[in-house]
Picture 1 (cartoon, one colour):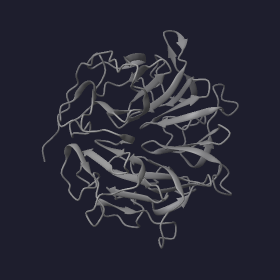
Picture 2 (cartoon, helix red, strand yellow):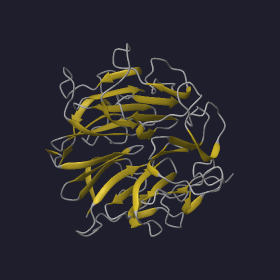
Picture 3 (tube, helix red, strand yellow):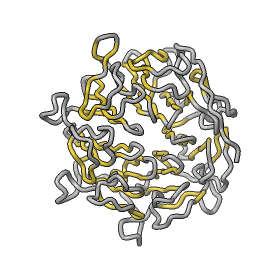
Length: 395
């Protein structure tokens, strides 16, 4: 097996997409980022050693480039070294690393350009509405509310009751392993675990649970979906409007704007004022640490840090800060939210956030994309971490 050598490089600071291009979604994998525009285009930058940018090369991308192979895209996902996209016709495209079958095309060969995900009968997989990428596995939500998964399965993250990898999608089973999970409206994937939001506001989880990231009150891996418990462990989580997975921790936003988190907490990434893992959800505290943070509209989880966006456009962040991913010119870990600062003032007017392995991204309403954290393939100065937000580009 060849050893991959990663080379850091220089990025051009500003890329102008033009006024006609508006950003719909930003997702970050371990070391690469994809940008979905409202016109269906996809742009990408960062590490590309396995072809995870999908532009037909394995060269690292030094500035955002339009992926010419992708048009009419409605959703995107980014994993460790692979990516997924959905076309508006419901067909799923995949590209990048594939040693565990995470591209879903009946092979284990990497592809540096998009290939079509296929069903067990080799027909094109259709009717997809959302995608999510774990480290080396993939998850798809169909319009009928069922969930399908493929790729690595050592922790049961495919939800089929087994441990064998699979290079084509099959539906995730229900909690008793007899039927299939249904009535799902959103999906997220961590390193080796999954979350699914049901239309009734409850949350299902399966896969790796060594840090309590399934939120079921145990530390046992689950090979079929289980319901996430509520904050006191006596019932089940409900009234949830958004879910998110980090590598080994999980989060959710309630219908009234509060944030609950569970799983690994060694770096304070649960924001509850402790550094203890939690196997049931715990409320994220506010900046003072004496109440709970509220009015949160977006959440994004990295490997060991968490980003929150409130309704007023302010960004709050907590967890590991070894590489400056908390963006406040400090390097110590933080276990309650702090507001992100830019040029001595609180960063404001933010509309989208994205957490990668060890860096953070935020988009302002006037089209400025900020980044901070480790140099994982796109910093303007090689071998230099950023401990304060820096403008990457403006569109």
